[in-house]
Image 1 (cartoon, helix red, strand yellow):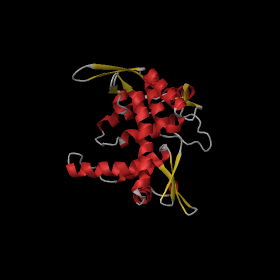
Image 2 (cartoon, rainbow, N blue to C red; image 1 turned 60 degrees about the horizontal axis):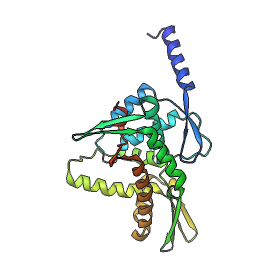
Image 3 (tube, one colour; image 1 turned 30 degrees about the vertical axis):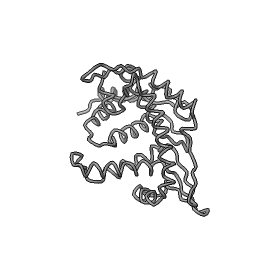
Image 4 (cartoon, rainbow, N blue to C red; image 1 turned 90 degrees about the vertical axis):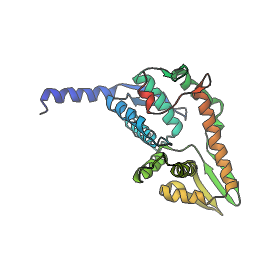
Length: 258
């Protein structure tokens, strides 16, 4: 039975947690206040290490939810994207455990300084903003607008995938289909709107399955532009995560490594 003293301690813990915050500058250049991770958050992140998905859906979905839970105030009409999530994950690891990550493999030990990695990402956003802003492409009488996937759209995809049966990634045919789906899903997350003859379709108004089916109908020549856009910003981020030729893996293991 919960005693008055126990209840008081729990209430005090909740109050302390809400009052202990840190500031983090996100991809829009604005500073936001976040609460520190608690032990339950760490548990949930570490649990995602066993996720066998090739696309890390469980880890990403967990991070999206924790991002929202830790954000102190969500400004009206604020839209956060996957780059914001990356900055949040790195800063959360710095604040909750340590800015230094040491990874051992069969050959050697790799040390990553998360403070430097975060600085590299922020610097890249400032120096090459064109990589991360929305882009318009036109061809075959169609105009499409693409941008970094938002956390809302990313979570929508993860929810839809969760409703499907678990896939056996030991099966070659299943893996082939999963990779093909991952390609289309990434496009569907990045394309915001499609305009044909002044008829504009906002893809956020569709279910994710409808969104995917719509994107599958676009001409390959137009899609190539979106692929190039996605590759450009992902490669720039990957460069920031690389130290001495080795890339830091962003997954649940980041919170289990001391």
